[in-house]
Image (cartoon, rainbow, N blue to C red; front, side):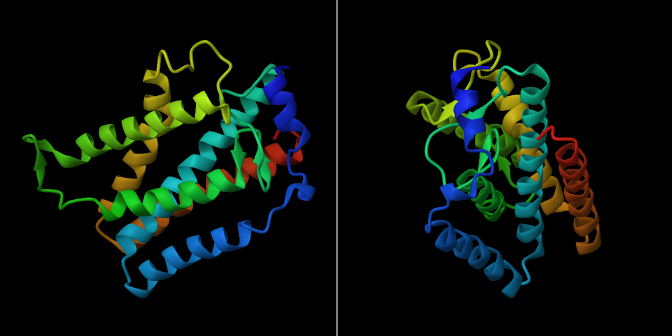
Length: 208
């Protein structure tokens, strides 16, 4: 087991790490979603939750990689935190992804708008994913986001881009563009349902 993984494991779901700033952060997230509900902006609301649900899916399989290899997760959350939820997910990251999808969806232009002559959705998926990878590289350089597998490194960011973020924004925009609220709700329910079953099942097995 790597040193970084051991340090993260030592504070995994340790309530003594709690910090009071979690409460205002939670209220900020609630307020952001409340604004979209007040405006009945279901496209953005469901898109934001879809991206958040996709992050949970990634964090679950990342934790399983750590469990079954016994060495390290694909990415680890290191350093001080108010609560370490999973080996690669702390409460601060969780709140960040809850907001990220809302921000990305609110910046979407109409579907017919083209960027450099190309359909805007694929372009924005690629650009947003690249920007997110750039932030992750900076976090890795500061030591708060650890990468300890040779194929998941700043020098070869293709997998981080392709696996780490492209699915997030693709699903976010897909849910945003679904024609009915019912379709959005069903899709989101499927995403969160898979997450919930995985957390309950793998958690009960002690794999998370």
